[in-house]
Amino acid sequence: MNWLRRRQLLEQLECHRCRLLPQVIADFDMTLTKYMVEGRRGQSTHALLSQGSTDYDRKRQELFDIYYPMEISPNIPVEEKTKLMETWWGKSHGLLVEGGLNIENIRQSVEKGTVGFREGIADLFEILDGEGVPLLIFSAGLADIIEEILRQKLHRTFPNIRVVSNRMNFDKDGNLTGFIGKTIHVLNKNEHALEMAAPLHDEEGHSVGSNGNGSSFIKGRKNVILLGDHLGDLGMSDGVAYDNRISVGFLNENVENWLDTYRRAFDIVVLNDGTLDCVVELIQELR
Ligand code: TMP
Ligand code: MG
Image 1 (cartoon, rainbow, N blue to C red):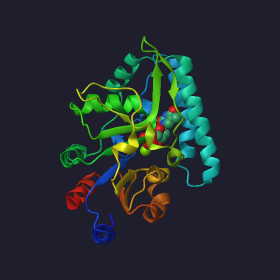
Image 2 (spheres, rainbow, N blue to C red; image 1 turned 45 degrees about the horizontal axis):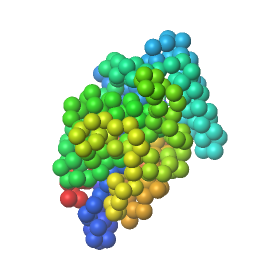
Image 3 (tube, rainbow, N blue to C red; image 1 turned 90 degrees about the horizontal axis):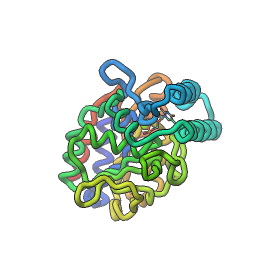
């Protein structure tokens, strides 16, 4: 991590006299969650989902085997990669609808899935909650799975968290009928309006599924701390009229090939499942 750069950025925030009102925008898979979980590769929200049909789970795994190496390849030009990612997400979501999925599959998949939060997440969530700092989780994964992971792993609700991600639509029996809104993939996060943000819980703490208003959630928050593991994650703040932004990049694989690019693109780079401590420290210094 580049501490000198971090100090310069904090000074920049101070000299703009806008230390107050930060917001955090974070990617989910492999940013808030770990790349390796108990010696095994951590699963993304898409990957951990078991539809209850081995045939369809296999078909989606085959797509992963084809497209994931393309996602992390430094050799595919961004326009070409964007088209490939569109195709992958389109096919994968098509299979979820075609093969059938219900809410119970989601609950069981999260229970069994190989997913774990990055070290330091409890401290981060506590300090953000305590300081009233909004956390917008902006993911190309699946909103319904992210919310189930938060429910199962955190054992408490956080009113300051909103999830912007691909959101499923279910019929009255809890069966998936399709997806709400335009697909978010790893390279088009910049195109997605914050209006998609949905409140995670209503005032009584019950989970809610309808879309809320992300822009009012982060209104007036002029300092952004952005967390991501993909270059496309830098586009997550494009819809925000911020004064200052500190970006933290989590580089989990292909480190030799990507390190220089990540150092140029992000203000701070955390390698190989490093902790979220630097983010907690930033929030502590900003309060
Ligand atoms: P993120 O924006 O939260 O990081 O989520 C995107 C990840 O989802 C990306 O790294 C690829 C992964 N993914 C799968 O594992 N399986 C799939 O079927 C699809 C469409 C994406
Ligand atoms: Mg990610």
